[in-house]
Length: 190
Ligand SMILES: [Zn+2]
Image 1 (cartoon, rainbow, N blue to C red):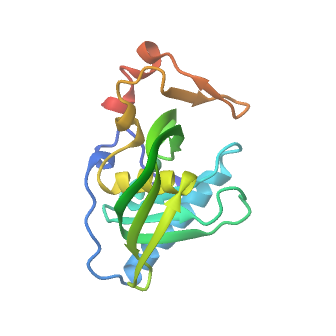
Image 2 (tube, rainbow, N blue to C red):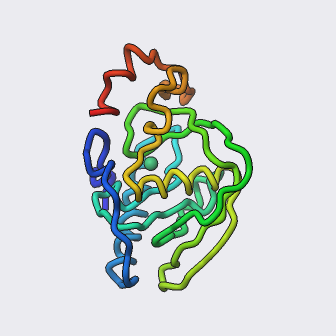
């Protein structure tokens, strides 16, 4: 599957709730493969960005399936950990604001507050339950992806925060956006 399968705002499906997976089947595993292929194809077209994770809704499949990169610091490791029906069972730690982007939100980055530690429950691709703790950037990414399964996009957390929006310049550096001019009446809220 290619990057063109990835839907972007203002597609209304990005604000729809995904369905739980009742039984993990070969179809679920094929979905995970399609998501992985689309993520890596997208990354290969972007010099300054990494494809950290993807939710199934982003390839227009409204199922509660997400994939998370196994190593955020090394683009050569092209592996993802699949999480089926992921849930946060406990929020821990302080709220920390940091930069986020999204394959479904072209040209906008934002500084989003997230819990610094979470406990997560999910199914693996064999249908077995897994539980783990996550911290820092991994915790942020998982909160971002679980939001997708609930129809929430990262910009929804910072709708009225005038100094929270950024764009990536051609050198790969984040530059603040003018809220009134570039954000307030943009495609983000259509
Ligand atoms: Zn996203």
